[in-house]
Length: 463
Image 1 (tube, rainbow, N blue to C red):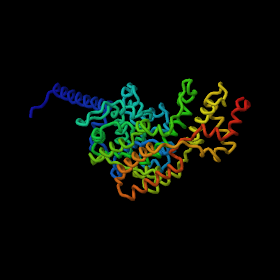
Image 2 (tube, helix red, strand yellow):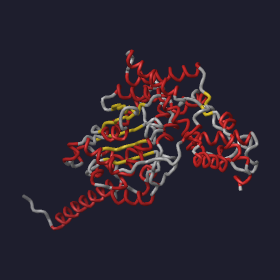
Image 3 (cartoon, rainbow, N blue to C red):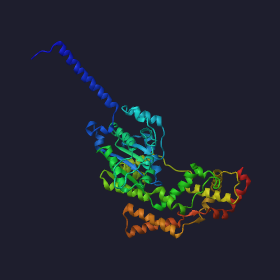
């Protein structure tokens, strides 16, 4: 064998060195430009916990007024408490509508420390409500992306909204590089109303493609909470025109006729406005079609009227019975200082009183309704008599509400038996006879309550 000359040996050493350096540089580039979608199952270590718990994305769509705030604030509270009970569940909260924790700098810092391969350039585009940066910092709002998505037609069902890329990167980084994370939760009741506008076949294609984009390990669980439609309507009405309106909406800070707006009659709200707000039946049909079309997408229904909604939700997260009970015991109860219907009623009484000249012109609307609320609470008038004067819907509106409620009930539970129909009818009649579906008649209330009239006409009341 011919021996190499010193020069040939030197050239060989240099060539090997160049190859080694090139491979090292390429490896650095691969780390800095990491794309979780390019990582195959064999590229990461499977530890025992991920062999036991399957990879799942939970999308909780509400609808509103089905204990969504309780669920979301509990999830955030569990996360914040960082108890061992919660940490052992393997759950990562991705987005909630309520009880958001806007510690953007802290979240971004923690994320970069946890995943140092993520480049700063990935966060430069912060436009819209579903950018990668907003997903990381818990400021994202998926309904905005779904609402602006130009969804395909029923005959062309493929495709995912562009915002999904941000969620996908966040989820896969945690799943592939955080040993404990296997379950990811998006809980936003406004998602449902948006999905209700899609063709059901489009829904099926979108969720199927979402599951595929996360990899073969993942399944998607869709959670829908059923509540009697008339009950939803009542609760949502008082939320919109009581809690939400009197606390934040500008049109309810000014008097009608001065740029403000009064709450519509409950019977009027039961029509187009309510249907457009919740879209509960169309939302359910979308989810049902998505579940039927793919083995990787599953629909779960929680019955609001029969069970503890928070407990059922935790159980759907694959949390065992004992752990679910422990978490509920650890969480603090949530409540409001005022019932939402009282806020709405106080506002209606204030408008009626002002029209009758019982409230001085310079008194602002918020002060007027707070004054009425204080008087009724202190004098005990509310508990004695505020429930006595009501305007109830006519038979036609009553039948429309009941028919829509039956349609949703039968779609969700496939319940067409005479027994089921009788049970639903009895529940509706009970709600109607107890005046839950009726408006408080503020004019009649004032007419019959001379003590309140006297209080409002007293100038010292407004000093």
